[in-house]
Length: 147
Image (tube, rainbow, N blue to C red; front, side, top):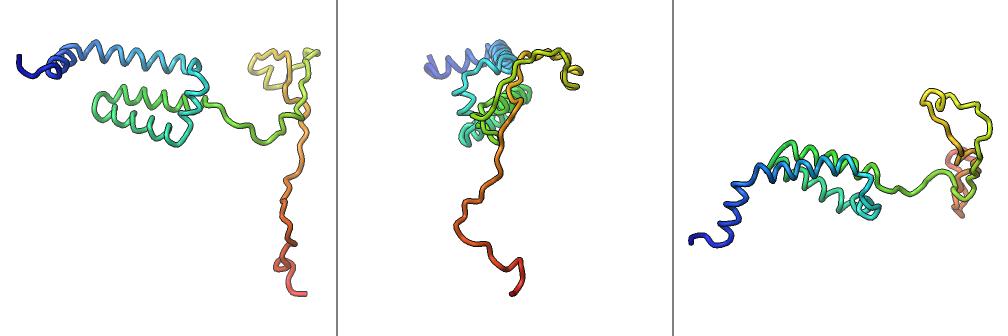
């Protein structure tokens, strides 16, 4: 027998490439549809610099060497993973956020247009504060001109 195990495996892959490509395509489509089911740790790792670079390189490698359709689907999966990764909250102080139960039926304009029927408003009253500089030096007198 010529070629050994590697030649046998390559022969199987070449002969069965069409079903394998269909399985990969089905896996990518299901991954895109159920992208919310990925654990938060996977989505958080995908949002790092190494994760973004790895996903980008995988999409480029697949599209250049195998199938542009699979590369496109991997790119879409990458964008969805990055858009659904957990983010740190900025802006409002979450400890000062108050929750209000909706008792009246008068809807906001956006809720009426989108046919929403909320039961709670999470950010009804938000306490904010001005940005603090924290610098210990006095401001320069360059803006005021010479005295």
